[in-house]
Image (cartoon, rainbow, N blue to C red; front, side):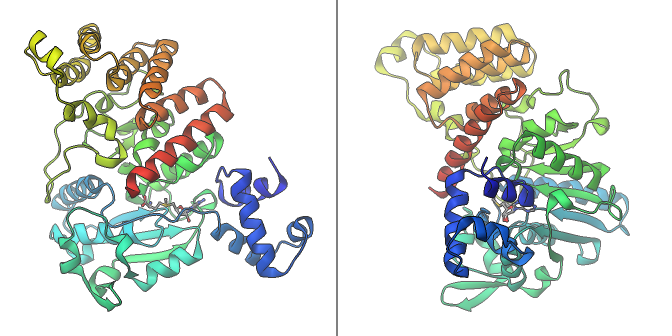
Length: 421
Ligand SMILES: C[S@@+](CC[C@H](N)C(=O)[O-])C[C@H]1O[C@@H](n2cnc3c(N)ncnc32)[C@H](O)[C@@H]1O
């Protein structure tokens, strides 16, 4: 690691490539008129470090990103407030990027009829530019990527030039502040929050930093609170004291001590990754799949049976995999495996079947077999995001830090590409 990489790593926790760091340094050297990288680094002042950090963060966000998380959070708080209507629900969004996530929370809670006096959202991001943008509350086209944009009519007004300004009634529900999760002062906030959103940050951290970040989040969250992560981050939380909640596509977790049943192994991925459970009711229609983040999930369903296989087996090919997931959830691993193999007999190149076989082997403590299946899966479908995430976790478990980092980076690139497409 170069001195510049380690400087930025200790300032942000981000696992940054040399190319990204070199580009940022070059940019700042041009801005500051310093011609030599060594001198630039030696003369580093806090304000200059902040400016450098701005160039390496990924402030990508949009309203209602992974919408099920917001609906799950709203249901959870509604039930809480129904039991104690005088209570103030405290919510944390870190990192909040340009405010899209915390404002989405405020909109969903408002639309669910929760009075403004009953909830308050704290939102932090390491980037002062992001925080300033969030406070301004003005957004362009990129922030509105959700399928259902009806919220824009209810909670925004035009700001000219195709931009929209969030209404004050929503804005006053969120307190924005610049802050680094890894340096969060816990003294006044231990167990403070009923809900914590920490999404799409840990994917950029290495293993020790992820562990440190999760320890901070664990301390901030009330013992009976709920935490929402990004999809690829759920397994890391499961490795560090959290248990997945049975929401579909919300990526919710609770402290393991609060969970009714402890999972058999700390590193076990959530069971819902084998078989998605029933979707909790949502005010707007839920997407059929986790959509662009995980196209692999829907791919088999979308693929029609070939002429050759249609006659040979009257059951649609996709049912075998759906049935495999259902059986796995019931604990019938052998039958689930049989269904995957039957599917493969008809579709030898079905990446999803290999992915499920990997999960089944991991569930039965055969990590090497699991690894082989997931490798086969990404060989057949190089952008299989979930398989890459599982392989990254396995690499971490095997102390292969650089392999894990490479897999995570590849998964993160795919994630970004799929979200953007
Ligand atoms: C991809 S955005 C995620 C925003 C939002 N949570 C979402 O999922 O849409 C990542 C954000 O993390 C912020 N960030 C990076 N390192 C951080 C740290 N150590 N503490 C707080 N925020 C950080 C970046 O500035 C960036 O805005």
